[in-house]
Length: 304
Image 1 (cartoon, rainbow, N blue to C red):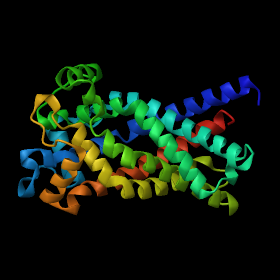
Image 2 (image 1 turned 135 degrees about the vertical axis):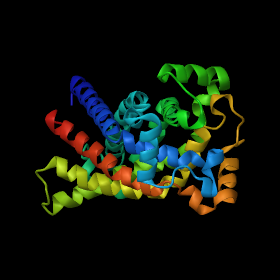
Image 3 (image 1 turned 45 degrees about the horizontal axis):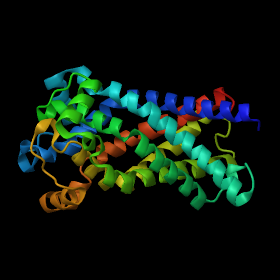
Image 4 (image 1 turned 90 degrees about the vertical axis):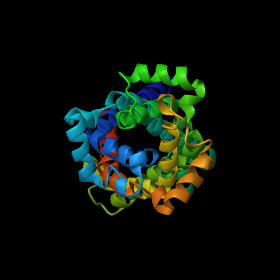
């Protein structure tokens, strides 16, 4: 490849990832809002025991619709898309680039399809680390915009949330929950990318939907999303709790991520670590399926 061809390939990979992120997050925004509210209600007085405000997927949706209207399902979606576009662009591009680098280093080849499962996992995990560091502040903003009304904290938009977070908590406010995120997020990306790649490899080897990029992406993407989300979910729970800890100038419930973990365990046991998992799996199926199907189709359209 010439230097110009490499630059064009990189740009197309970024474009495909950004497009897949924006489309996926917009279509699954209602499920994401429901999941976050259900997952974090333990931080509110009415969120414990019989007084739990949100009891299941449909009841939570009904409460949101009644109290805030249908537009509330997309509350924070601008921040979501603003975050998702660079996140997905980084995730897919870094994954492709790391796979290529590993293929060159270990196999002296540009053929990434010959990589082992461990090598693909390594590439995906490295991609996850890089993506997390670069885009984490936007993840904090997204969580706070989605959770704000339920905790009595109102933001006028993305920039208001960014400003108030900095004024009230300083630069550290943008990186709350980063610790547990680094313990789960990168490995989630690694597992997701690996399961997707191996699933696609299996389908092509057995001539199953080999000419249908969208259906392949929907099938392998949904399976990879379910497996990866379930395994890394406790880390996601802690991350959400820490991101909203002390929000709006309120007293902090948790001093550290470890304190958050121990508090949830004492208060609710292992069920607290997996609270909202059914909603998350329900969301992960279309979310992961759409992102991989969209990414695959965009790559096909751009002849990557």
